[in-house]
Image (cartoon, rainbow, N blue to C red):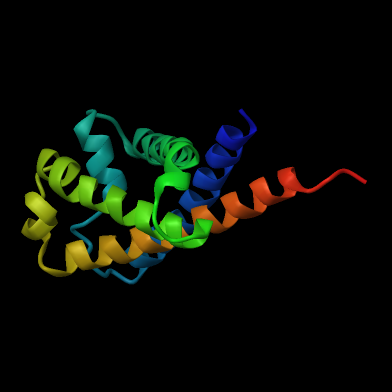
Length: 145
């Protein structure tokens, strides 16, 4: 049970990092048509607050999923496993969520940079999640003094 809690926390922390990068992207007006919060909100006919809640809920969900499958991922350490996991999540987003959100397969309706940028963000998300998860679970494995 502790590894799932660690996964949730790692997923939420990685979502904070991802969110900061998304806000920075918006501030620089880079790919303004690709706003994941607006896309999530529109998918459920909600506003920006609902979009952010969904965004963090998805991050927590991915943290749980990572805590369950990380031992089966290639890489040998949680950071590399997190990157692999992030790329798997990116692929699922590109073929399932993007078309449902009106962006087409791989989000190509937003241009060729959309799948590249979202891929980079998912790699960062996975690396941060894996790193935090590794440190949280490593501290659990240390003997008590």
